[in-house]
Amino acid sequence: MIEFLNLKTLNSPYEKQFHQKFDQFLSSGYYILGKEVQQFETNFADYCGTTYAIGTGNGLDAIRLILEAYKILGKLQIGDEIIVPANTYIASILAISQAGLKPVLVEPDITTYNFDTERVLEKINTKTKAVLAVHLYGLVSDWDTLSKVAQSHGLLLLEDAAQAHGAIWNTRKAGNLGDAAAFSFYPTKNLGALGDAGAVTTNDDELAELIKKLRHYGQQQKYVSRHKGINSRLDEIQAAFLNVKLPALDASNLKRRQMASTYIKHIKHPEIILPVFDTQAHVYHQFTIRTKQRDDLKKYLDKHGIQTLVHYPVPPHKQPAYSEWRHESYPVTEQIHREILSLPIRENLTDDEVFYIIDKINRY
Ligand SMILES: *Cc1c(COP(=O)(O)O)cnc(C)c1O
Image (cartoon, rainbow, N blue to C red; front, top):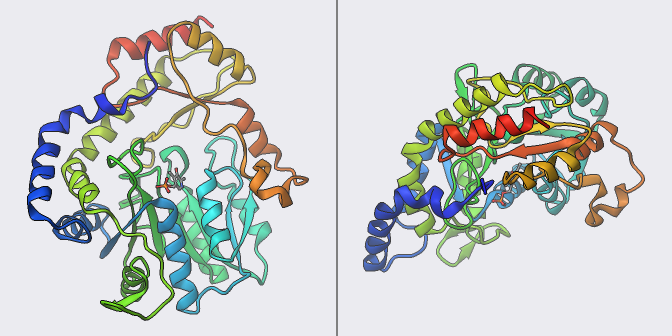
């Protein structure tokens, strides 16, 4: 069986270093917001090219904290409209709702699966205050167009970079494109911890300082809460593991790109649509193909020992939690959710396995 993902084997090259980190951690007796968190914040900001990285408990909270901070800074108000892709993982949208803001869904482009920028313009009105772009499957959203749109309408431009660690637009990395960006280090992401973890990146001094407080009960100093913050700190041991893995991120992304290139070069099937290829802007968090026979192809590959997944089966506007949207229609989003299929793509997939998968798909 070619597994879609196996976290145990994916992390096994780092086991020795993880054990060392854990031993140090155990003997330090310091478990929360210690040296490893500080070190990771420096390392990850350096990696992204930003002035700041602030560790958070997870990616959802990272988005939420950005929005809460802008509310305190007076740049957002309860009820403001935030433009977000209709075709995204639910967390992007939950964060907006939780902050008391209104998610306004925009259809994707059928070739990139990211925002259709023309349609972003259609949704802008006087209540619109921000655009939250999601670099879905690891591909940076069309940043030239989005930044022009945001600038000309005076909107905040934010990134959900939870799937795009290391992706580059022109010369800048994801996380250093918008006013602020959110990352997740959920174990399956391109940079994954051994539990929950996340971060905000930004070049904005005021925002960074505020988010540092908000993640820790809004505390200005110990036991003095300046704001009604939350508890969403990056865990010390997760930061230690991330410090071990960060130096290997570029090499791991390179392997994903090489695999994507092989898939794209060799998969030849009239019924199958491949993702765009880009050696800079795409880090292939997922390698997603599209076909009208998705469910049948999935079964066929399964029968041949190839595990695939659907990212994602239920679009946000069809989620029970958002029943207020159940009568709305987003045909492009719905089509993508019906037709999408993710093939295994991970650094420890062998060439033989990649070519076996290609061969089986071409014979379908
Ligand atoms: C994973 C993910 C999140 C949420 O991250 P968590 O750490 O699981 O909270 C948000 N947005 C996108 C696009 C994601 O893929």
